Image 1 (cartoon, rainbow, N blue to C red):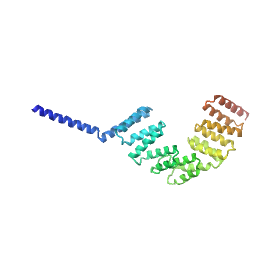
Image 2: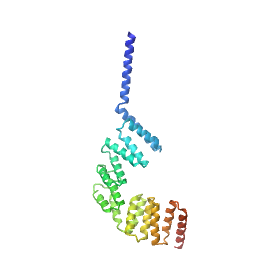
Image 3: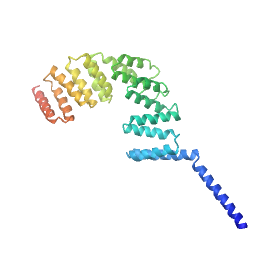
Image 4: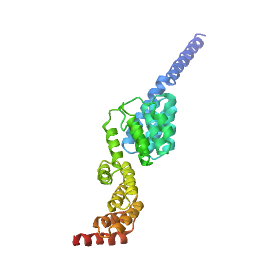
Length: 284
């Protein structure tokens, strides 16, 4: 009889111990800690460029504790690295369901909206951003978008209403917009922008300059320069052909043509134009 009682007590102790361990394992704190470890593990994989393993770790984190914003942010960033804007957008939106004022998610969703040509949606996301230290600033990104659309008036209005942001890039950008109205100033600004890797702005300004000063050889050459910086090689050859018509003996036109044609795999044309450039340089 005593043995039965002791055995019963032992069973109760084992059951309670197992229940305690199970409760700890499945507690929110434990699952959150485990998810954070998976995120940290994923970041190590990502730093080593093992994106597949990183994705698995982040997915484990999301599965263990869906309410951890860091796992969704990590997956969104990974998606952007892989050029998957749809996936990134979905993950950033999940972050906002967890933290409705997450500044990074609002910022990145605004950028994705601009890439999707949805400026109104971008404005809605950017309007919720309170962090004044984010750079480039949301207003700068909006203005840049409207410059690319050749809507200079809207771009200026956005920047002029950004007086609360003491960013020098905003004032510089206003100057660049005004520069588009002058051929010489516009042409000077294009290579300066390319040297700063602001290739999209350079292309917008160069396009505007070529539209306004289509009879100038250099307007087409600088447009081609900006197009090459944006890897638009076919468009660059078209611009350079227009420059060649305006001035058929300018060697730099043929230098650029040869480079663009080489990128397009048109090696015979590239060789001929490079030879032409060298010949014209010899005449000067």
